[in-house]
Length: 178
Length: 441
Image (tube, each protein chain N blue to C red):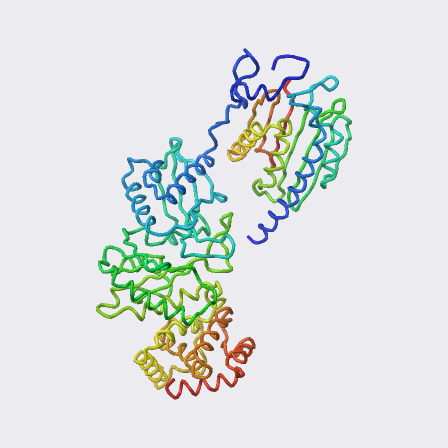
């Protein structure tokens, strides 16, 4: 029990630092996006004000190793103890049109608060300057994770797909509906 | 979403119609569309709100609000919750809140769920712990929609099956209608129906607490004390779950119960007891005056916060804990002192004295009576050597340490204590004590 507590503390501290840095990295973008649901990015629509390169740099800066094998999507990963935090950032003309976050527990344990916070951070990214919307999305995510079932939701222009049934992992995919 | 130039105002979308309307004149749709999502919250979230209401109602002494979320057709549930409310409203509550960090939901038939353990932090103004550590008790809630259809106490007996190490709910306020009397600023006496003369013990308790506090001085203690009185044999057995285990047994005259507290997230804090409760068995006293028992248990209670929080061989020496409490019974009471000396002498004559204090393992065994008195002799000797304050200081130092299973007098740490407090080596003190006991203490 004592060991488990220490793990939780380490994860929570690391993640808090990560999230704080993430918020800082996007402050500059506030003027650009000015309350848009989506914005055009080449042939696609993207999350307003989020530059793929800046997002990837933020992930790298907080311990993720990132690579871009296909040019279309960055793949990033950070391992803390027995838990792997993974994300995929899908790029179009420098913007982000799809985001996937995944938390894998090698020990087979349930999703921790840190894991939930990680997925929640991706979930609210399109609505990050709107506390009411973000709160409702967090509520949805919490409820679905507690229900421990695969589910899909449409949140304005975005499609959210949560998969909890696969191999000790919980995955959230956020993409702009077509 | 209609095609535009890609510049919809999200805030306008969300605010125009409280997250419901997507654009002027457009079709209404919820902000989050999902077959599985209930915007009213998950079962656990609903439970959390319900528990907040119940905690606030208890703090505000609002019975109607406390009962409002319960299934009124469940007579047993309503009777139980009315009882608990009527009992608790007579105490001063410092903190009431619920913790659901480790609560899991188990679905039962007809949309009903069972949630457990639900931990209720219930801190009286008499209690204190380090930081936010506070005493608590646990329950299993059965909920249908927003209505509580059942509440089951987590007890020592059902705990393994229902909720692991969650703190048990074994306090007297769960089983009996109590009359509670506050004495002065910091003492609460509570009696069940078998105690019609509760007020009689107010002055006694205040006087005995004064004696113990005079001895203990400004050392670490609790802000207040709670004493339960009963003449009911069954209650003495069931309160705090000592009926079938523990040292008290059914023939004990009283017991002092110590409780570990929980932290913010509900995990039990092992470092220090967060609360102390006393139960006085008036039936065991018959017509005799219980003041000596009250003083004995108060000696435990006043010093419990400074007593290391562990039991068995890992806990402090029982001879010191019980011996000091017995020693306090003799303070200012020559007749009691003579009685204790006489029993020690009788024990020595019958060959029960082996030159060392009894081990924790054997303390409450066949020679329990002698062991109490023998333990007291350590502090009587300390008083004779260096005065009453030295006896108390020796006790305060000893109860910070584990008994270790060996003779405490042989430990190097005791040598340090004896030198600091009594100005003697452990070996010299041991010799003096042996002589003291054999000569009739």
